[in-house]
Each structure stands twice: as C-alpha cells, then as structure tokens.
Amino acid sequence: MPGKSEQEQFELEQLIKLAKREEGHAQWTKQLICISLISCLIFMNLSLGSSSFKSIDGIQLCSFMYWFIQFLFILLCVFVTYISIKLNRKEQDLRRKYNVNFVMSEIIF
Image (tube, rainbow, N blue to C red; front, side, top):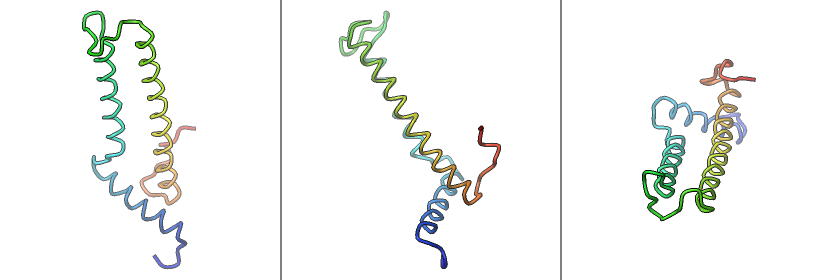
C-alpha cells in the first residue's frame, strides 16, 4: 500500500488476517485457550479425586497438596484471563482504529 508508514502497513495486514479469521469458526488461538483450560480442569479433577472417586495420584482430600493444586489452578485461570483480555483488547483496538468489523455497542464503559 503506497504512501503508508511501515507501522500502518503492518496494522492493516494484521487487520486483514483478523477479518479473515472472524469470517468463520477457525479462531485457533481462542479455541486453544479454552481447550487448554478444560484439559487442565479434567486433569486436576482426576488428580484430586473426590469423596466418591479415588485420586489417580493418591492425593488425600483436603491435604496441603490438594489445596495447593486448587490454588495453582486459580492462578492459571487468572493468568489466562489476563492474557485473553489483552489479546481481545489488541484486536478490538485495531478494529476500532480502522473501523472494520467494529460496533460501538460492543464496548461497555
């Protein structure tokens, strides 16, 4: 695109890629985030067990390790939420800057 700065050309290329991704369901980054958290949750539940299901790792119910794993999972969820917000904000700012696939009602102030 002649007459555009390098930064603007880069942003426009990213915007084109983003618009193409949003045309369908193949938003692999966001899907990978969800699949990863679900996998961690399943593994955590199998590792911790319950009153009716024995832990696959032998972790005792309400032991230090039990609560430590719970705490780590909460930290992971907070971290993934932060990263997801940053990712979505970056995409939203780009769409907003060039007014592509952006509706002001998407934003809650």
